[in-house]
Length: 83
Picture 1 (cartoon, rainbow, N blue to C red):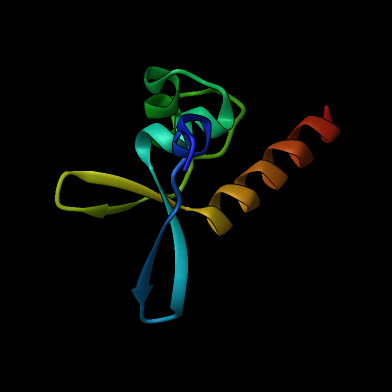
Picture 2: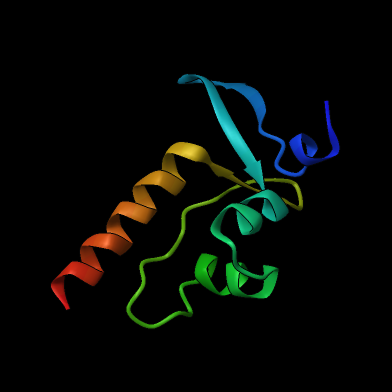
């Protein structure tokens, strides 16, 4: 795998709903093209006018399901369309 292909690594985990793709905190920030500090604000609901980004915690690790990220982006687009 080339260095650029390693930049965003999607890991597959098995859960009660089958296999789902989870992104690490850093991978999610990179995918959204925001800083880790901004992603933290999005997760904690501290960005006015934007919905909170749903996460899964495994110990101290913060993981984001790709499906949840896609749904969140659609919600943000809908919020922007209203304004």
